[in-house]
Length: 281
Image (cartoon, rainbow, N blue to C red):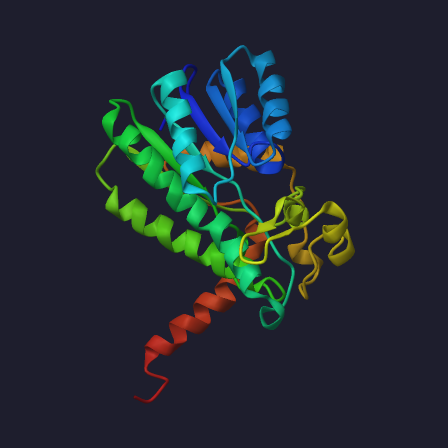
């Protein structure tokens, strides 16, 4: 899909990181931007900064884990602009804990944002995308953790594998329509994803996590057993430009860190080997 001035981009997690960079990249192309974020001040800060590009902006506070709030986001978009041409389901959270140490509340929180947040957006925006005459595109932010296992990030990996799978199915189901789909799979990016517990509230435990809680548990950096080959950090701005270029080329997969191919091949080769009859049935 050709991105051009006057189109409307809706971006969740737009208050920082990749979402904020996508918002600026879209606005620099003359697009109108709906900046959605769980942090109202962050969404408003992004929207204010975008006005230098001259396009119309709208800031909306949204917790994507809540269906009614995402429905409200779609309605605000419809009222303000009437259409949505680029839907960036970018909001995401992470926990750096071994699987055996994750609580039921950990799983619920990660899944509700990373997976259910996307399904809420698809449900809320799909009627608009199908009704409008213009072409549109959906970007679902997964991760390299949606393609390879990362020890210490089991809950995050499980959610991102799910994002990849649901996006692949959505792509096939929308084949031949005016709606495209891309799956963003970045490696390490200079964002606050690993400090995301600052915005956590556990409904099941009635527990709000403060920034102090997050800092006490985790420094905000990524900790894995992988060597430095896979720790190259990209700026959110670079990831945003790679992503929008992929959208214009109608690419399903958007991989920002080519060096991760070796890890992906380890996994894919292992899976492929079991189809060769090496295991007796």
